[in-house]
Amino acid sequence: MKVETAMAQSVIQDGKIFVGKSVRPEYLDLKLANRHGLITGATGTGKTVTLQVLAEGFSSAGVPVFAADIKGDLSGIAAVGEPKDFILKRNKEIGLDQYENKAYPTIFWDVFGEQGHPIRATVLDMGPLLLSRMLELNEVQEGVLNIAFRVAADEKLPLLDLKDLRALITNISERSKEIMQKYGNVASTSVGSIQRRLLVLEEQGADQFFGEPALDIQDFMRIAPDGRGVVNLLTADKLMEKPRLYSTFLLWMLTKLWQTLPEVGDREKPKLVFFFDEAHLLFTEAPKALLERIEQIARLIRSKGVGVYFITQSPLDVPDTVSRQLGNRVQHALRAFTPQEQRAVRTAAETFRKNPALDTEAVIKELKTGEALVSMLENKGEPSIVQRTMIRPPEGRIGPVSPEERAGVIEYSPYYGKYEEAVDRESAHEMLAKRTEAAAQQANTGGGWTDVIFGGGTAGAGGKRQPASFGEQVAKEFKRSVARSAGTMIKNIIVKSIFRR
Ligand SMILES: Nc1ncnc2c1ncn2[C@@H]1O[C@H](COP(=O)(O)OP(=O)(O)OP(=O)(O)O)[C@@H](O)[C@H]1O
Ligand SMILES: [Mg+2]
Image (tube, protein in one colour):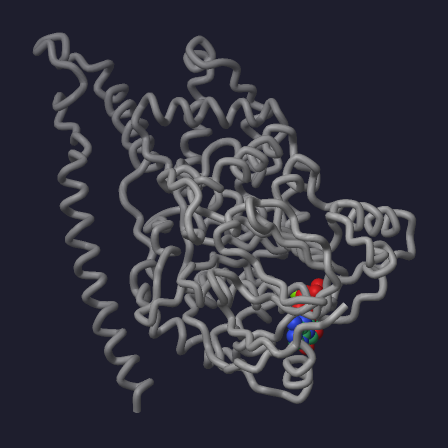
């Protein structure tokens, strides 16, 4: 077979991302990029670099990207790469003569607010299903959590942070008789376990994650002034130490995208591409309800213009119902020592559209670093014949940015100051405390004898303070936040003038 070598390759060609070279150039078609994808391979085989190559491709095409950066090595995408010898050699091999090292517009995020802008969500936003997963609750305990969310909705109690949830759980257990008639059983043992789990979650630092200002998911959809899509990187090294927290958190983001984005059908290119690294964590021991949710999101988020790419070591990590929906595939080398590993190799080989010229099963075991079996969707959405492909090198740096470089990117970010400081407005926890206080005062005045005389209800009688109206709260909050952002702006300007010198 004749090998095409003369062709010049840029990152984007005719609406396609140039991924690498087999017996022919291999592309990821932007039109079919919302049909999701899967990157698999053993450690050190080139998964992260492939992810970087795809992310650079999407960004170049004006598609914003979100990716979890597990080891920090993806952060190099924010820095200009170096044309080292092994890269130039690879470029020659694949006939890449339009290679230009450059940095990509990057925004760093970090749940803990240390290596990027903090990401927060309210407890209400997270919802009982994902929260149960985070807290590792059993079915009975999950039932209690569901009741808590329903009570909060019925009684208009804003569930913002973990304090609110704890106060509410205590409250419903104190009112368990009344609650049972309306909503169902609130067993005190379940309440005790939930409270303990909430404490653990707080100790893991998740209290920083719950609260406001909550992430505006539209902030992921940013396009840089030069037309490239912004690469949003979630620093996940610390988060990864708590696998449940990590995986539920990413799933929440997907849920949020799915719930808030409008239907757009198939487009020329996706609106956003979401890379889910260490995806096996999402699926291990996942209860049926959660698996169904994941399967459903994968199926429906496509028409919202979002492509989801899972990255994991073995293709067996992804359940069939989800795996079937992952059309664009890059399979790096796998080891095959144990029977389990051999099974993974066989499965990986079988999922590809066969290439008569290739012993897929054998090739998977002998692929070199940065080499992969590639099959992408083409034409009307059918998988291309699998090819042994040399993946192109990225244009950004391979490997992490330095802490100083990262700090620079964060300070210059358009979102600097928007999320940095937490806001603690009045919510369920304070409102429930007021209720308790009011009840105690009522009891102190001997059951409200004034009411007997004046015929008044509890409100206003006995000099009790009504909670501020929502409008007043908003006005107060607005003033506070204006003062705060002015403060941050001043800080910003000072910092920037230092940076420029
Ligand atoms: N397409 C490529 N072009 C140039 N070099 C590559 C490419 N792919 C991989 N490499 C080289 O191989 C090294 C390992 O690749 P990478 O970090 O992507 O592996 P990985 O599969 O993500 O490993 P891990 O599972 O440990 O995270 C890179 O640091 C780089 O030097
Ligand atoms: Mg990696």
